[in-house]
Image (cartoon, rainbow, N blue to C red; front, side, top):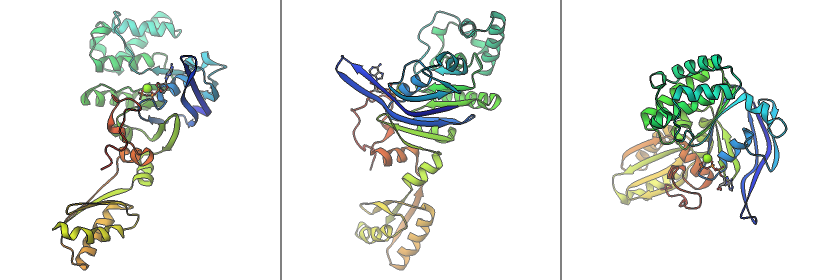
Length: 332
Ligand SMILES: Nc1ncnc2c1ncn2[C@@H]1O[C@H](COP(=O)(O)OP(=O)(O)OP(=O)(O)O)[C@@H](O)[C@H]1O
Ligand SMILES: [Mg+2]
């Protein structure tokens, strides 16, 4: 569905300054995949999507989308894809249903077919009761669902969603995802989306592409990324802080142990297998006569992966800007 090689975009600002927004991205997406693109603000996610949707022209490299070249065949590309941009849906005075029908006509449906499609999409995205409401009067979550419906008017095989759930409350986020997952299942659609919600990427995407400074720095299943890059974390507590150094020695000897930290009577570390480590620690402490009062293992999150890759936490949130982010704020 997507094949890019060395995809690059430079922007020139104030005639002299060059922004290297995307620096040579190689990406392959197979039909039916759901790929989440993660990265901090300014990483180049939106710029990449805009190149893939033929809205802006790459500075260098190639991209084929749905079998068409984005530079030489932009019209064919657009016919086969849907695109829901970041922060779409600015205050329209049209009614929701009319907005959808207009979009259908723009995409070449006759008015009757466009109305039929409007009915189907309103139904599919749970918007039927809101069909005669003005777009500008819809709530954020309702509007985002309408945005998704607009991206689906021409039944594309490939849908790009740029931060579909940003700004929605947890209920509306879950609701939007339910719709996305169902539409995908029913229409065998390929989905490429960006998100700042790591839990969302973790549970929904089969594949996560991490972008930083315009480059792909990781591309795998969430599970493999967590296993290979972050490792489990163990936390053990000695009965007294005087015993912590001896406990730390035991922890440091565990398979794959790294980042061993002592804080009072508590010792934490990353290890290859957290559950096995806990058992081994309890036994080892017993043998060494170190009094352990608690031990637990926690599985890594995608945020740990991001931290391991970049030294920064993605949790610092969508509202901060590139350059403002403190390095490794959440590292402790
Ligand atoms: N039209 C433009 N002119 C100049 N610079 C631009 C332009 N569009 C984007 N940029 C710059 O390119 C870089 C990548 O921006 P992009 O919008 O692709 O980031 P993003 O990963 O989508 O970030 P966010 O998570 O904040 O949406 C940023 O430094 C941005 O300021
Ligand atoms: Mg963006």
